Image (tube, rainbow, N blue to C red; front, side, top):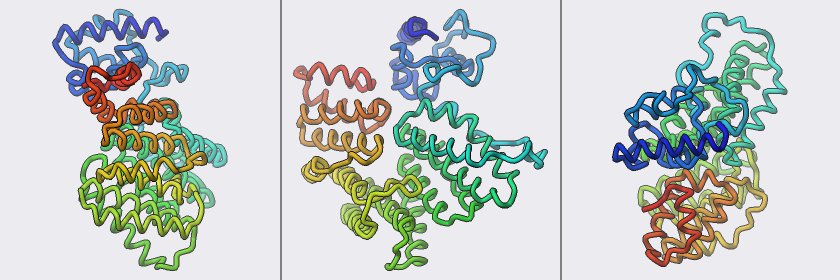
Length: 412
């Protein structure tokens, strides 16, 4: 779709929705999409190129595909020709984890021949670059063909390469799980994390297993299954600490242990268990101090700086806005990923909103949007904060805040 075609199509969708008397939120819920996605479609930002999505949208609007889009093709290619034409969410990635990834290998285990392991390594590194940058559209496009390739390669490789390929597969599924969590697709994150755990076991890298469990705990938190989140993180942490003891000095082990303590701090904060959240945050800081530097083992970005970023988030969850602002405004995050830097700005925006400081909150959210538009436009906490700010400000709401609410589909 050209930009003009997207705008015409989006106007058509909005008109049909209004004729049915539906809000964006109602229609989005009916077709299993987010209101943010639908808002982008109606504004001509989000293209709808796939026939299955066109049909879903047409059904939700009570019209035929032809009535919705007169020139809709009989078939739409699964892979778009450019990043501009890709769905701006993880639809394609979600399809990748639906069912067995390579059923033909079950029937023909011999495979097509040896894989280029170095090429696959570079592809997985690129996947994590996109994940850390919250570039979900490009990530989804990359994962579509990559996951089946690595799944096939891991199953058909020589014994010398097999462990490394299973490790690459685990890392790929961990990236998927992290991205799904950020896009509020927690059920898909659960599936991806579970596959990451299995692949990590096959790789022989035990710490990769525990890094994958961290992703699983994140999925449970987003699902609001806090008991399952606590169980998965606690059992993993207990096993690690029994094995390594208090004298653990291996950086990779410390990274995983620290990340699991951060996960538990968030879990307890979400549950309102203030004391336990503080205890886990203290333990995470102690591990970060022992590590002594910011690292990115298993793409966890654990270290002293990330521990403090998470401390800001925990303080916000506990309603301690003053502490969050005091800690967050003093942090130098220049060496961290875009995702971590944007997350800190988002949490500072939430903290200022708790104190009803509309201007400061808006400024922090706009900074976060500049770093990572997808985070602010799709994250539930960001959109809730924007709505709260509009309600606080009432008629005096600044134009910049109203425009931000429009972009994030966060109007009250």
